[in-house]
Image (cartoon, rainbow, N blue to C red; front, side, top):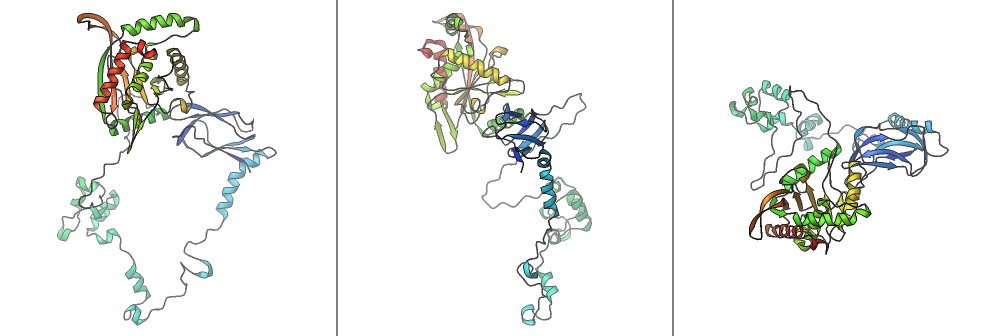
Length: 447
């Protein structure tokens, strides 16, 4: 029997993916560890390795196919010594045999019985049937009536309702005796399906979300198919804004001391080929602040609150297909040079779609920096199941009070978005205060 090659689950949450590219073709010999295909998940494009040895007998799912379910057979491998052509035709032969099997009647059982009863005609007696009613009458009496038979409606109304797919049982008729007439079907209410009655005191159920309808427009345009990543971003951010009560807290932070320290550190790290960015230092500052204010290093989990013992910072990175958040694990304990080196590697592989699931799934909080685009301030959307995200604006020269005198300083605005189910406003304010202090006195984060 051929070996079935199934769509792999390349991440814990993956339910389907896109078979982006086959790296083998029918007739190729493969060994364990060979790269067979590239699979596009909701976050990255990953390589799919062979586990078994053999010959690619048949490719069942062509490259470029979207929505391939996890566990679906995508190809067949003929084992060593097995005829590849025979292996390729095995599924068709199996299907033909199944179709050739006679299908027994579901109502007939062994011995000619029907549903456990004899197929002999039933005998009626006056005492059991009530007078001269026969079997036919008894069967007719037991037959259930359809909703249409119980509803009083004119023949024209019934015909129109059938054409429009309208359930007459949910319409109140305006004709004689409550009879439904054509006029009752012309109103807007008739076009809506009937809703089940609700018992007194029952809370109304929220309306189910409906998929977006295609937009009809005469404006010249191009319809671009959404990638798996863009679909996931749309779904998760919609859920975040609908389900998480966001609270936003903003502080202005002086950057001059941090910029001076960065310049000094880069001069000393130049020989090692390491260059710190401002964002590397802000990652460290957020991580240390989360450890100082553990009430914000949490995650809301239904009837539980998860309190984390380390700060894993998810860093928003823009890539061609959307956005991904590689994680600096344990950023509170790592040196600035280690964070810079790791971030450079993660960002590079993120843009190539080569991150592993464990490198972008998880994290205890996020940071998103749009300062390089000149954005002064913004409110970021929380990345569930995390409970906070720090939005960083551009550093710019502003009038700023220093030592009770108005001076010109480099100042940036930082806005924290907090899940108010898990984090109180006062605790969020403490985190923003700690973050501001660490950035303005940066030696505190590396001491």
